[in-house]
Amino acid sequence: MTSQELTAKPRERVPRHVAIVMDGNGRWAKARKLPRLMGHQKGVESVRTAIQTAAKAGVQHLTLFAFSSENWNRPAEEVKGLMKLFLVSLRREIAALNKANVRVRLVGDLTAFSEELQQQIADSMKITENNTGLTLNICVNYGGRWEILEAAKRSREVPPEELTEQKFASLLPLADSGDVDLFIRTSGEERISNFMLWQLAYGELYFTKILWPDFTENEFLNALNWYSNRERRFGKTSEQIQQEAKKE
Image 1 (cartoon, rainbow, N blue to C red):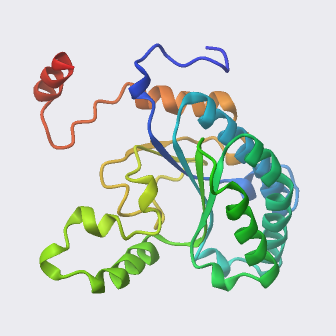
Image 2 (cartoon, rainbow, N blue to C red; image 1 turned 180 degrees about the vertical axis):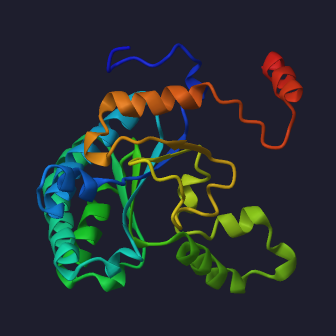
């Protein structure tokens, strides 16, 4: 398989929404006897590749877990380096993302960041807000429980008899992107780690031992091809799914 092709499947077999936990930057650096921050710097290249691959494949929403609310517990020097890298990367990449018609959204408790970083985040979202291509959600100082709690706070204004699953989902900070179809986690870890807990209710979970800095276009295409062969039943039987397919 070349880096440009997908297994021959109908267009609708491409996931609408892909979410990725980009794990393994530190281990990648450690294996090469490099500072952990160099692993994160190398990981930025994989982010760029993932965005390009998702857009070419027809993915409509790509959500990346960049910095969790628990990541503040990492060594202070690493956190400081990550904040600087985040700021520099936004400044450097936003023009290219805008040119590629990518809509950028940053989701999480942004108040914990410096004023300079908050301003860059606001500017990045403003610049790309009217773009109509791939929606790129970058989760920073984010946690799945935090997101559900935010929706719960907003739901106070909704009469109890009107509060349905659909209504509650519409109150989530990431509501516009809907449920996750394909969840990818690199580095061999097999857990969700407090990421998009509501949206992953029926997501297909793909785990790979590849470390994030080594997650190439072909690795992403492998995940998309794996997804294309999954039978998503949503509680139905295989026979029901097959009958519905015949009617289409």
